[in-house]
Image 1 (tube, rainbow, N blue to C red):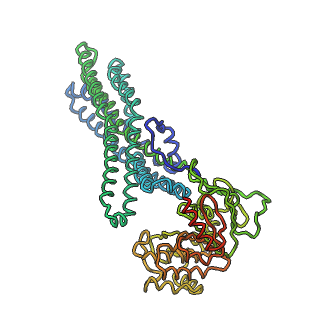
Image 2: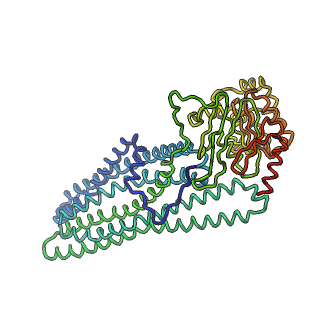
Image 3: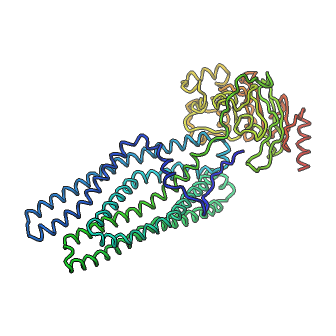
Length: 592
């Protein structure tokens, strides 16, 4: 079985590059080109406005102020105001456009991620915690959204301003330009060295948040058990430990992300002091005007201020890339339960047989212990089969292989003479029903849950469904839900209904589908005898051609089975009679 475990990042792992992150996000921007283009034009306009400011200021000092020309001063002041207003308007429009891009990217990314999750097999969810997956869908995608809506154009704008100011610094006076840029070069080298560490710190923070969500969701899901055993203290200790790990990781992430801004502030101050010292020396030697020095100092600010913003944006970029790493891990996965084509002219095997195992073996994980070895069995139409055996012997695994929730490690499962892998998921679900010990219900009504997943009943009304149930002798079971009947509300996970009512809904849902094979995995283990008898009446309404596979520990549940199989020790063996099945079970327990 494929290993689907999402691994935490190693300290020595190579972080995803900006190019690979962009390739992963590029498909999501396909419909956003116009918004991005408008935002980019606005960034260029805003940058140009900011770069024109110091030139106009220098002109005001060296001409209007120097010669006390107040008319010219007002003209330049109006021009400066117009430039800055134009830059402000462009920046506002850019913010609106990129906010739209961020929301759209978030919407599409979450859609892709959820679609991928729903395409992955049961093995993936068995190997990964629900809380961590929720964190990837919710928190990690939001980090990506924040980068697109807030930081991306700020990064481009800062880059344009840095490039423009740097060029002007060198053009106006190459000597002052070199001394102004020297601290920035040193900081860029430091940034390059530290970027991998910053990203790892942010990824560990996201992972610790995912682990915290996992612990919290698991504890809340089992809170009744925790209270029943008076182990709230254990719940608190476990949460405190996870919260402490998340706190430490978050602090380290905050330190890493906030480290660049003060360093670039220091570099900007150093550049400012160096330029001021050299500028004063050049003025004393008649090689520079006061207005040009003021303009030059403004360009130094125009160079280092966006660098400080880039330091913050760079940390946001590292957080986004760490989040993208975690999202990409899921998006890159492929299901190992893909449909395979049926070969042209391929003949069916075991004609007349509904389902068959041929030399089937199975193990959980690449190096896991084998649960089944060289299993061969046959299921005929209309018969009832029982699987008995010790806990962990492989009964549920056998049933899951029948329903193709897993694929065998070796061998083949045949359904109606065809390799079960050649059926589409919809075809397979229509032919094979599965009722679990813990029924799954969706929020809505009893009606919503009965028609759930049934294409023929998806749009049926309450009256029409009641008529169909009445025709099959099932309408009387709705009395268990009181006067509301099919309109009985069902909250998430079926809260508000008794266990017997939940299981009755699950049975009605399966029976109304009329599957060719119905698998019951300990489906009546936790209910009372009266409810169990009602459920048996529901099963009795199935067509006589329906094959039933029953997994149960209670012997009365399987006493009417046509054939009993003992599952244990890696084998599935025909037990023959109930007495022999009991003898095999007792013998296995003594030897183990």
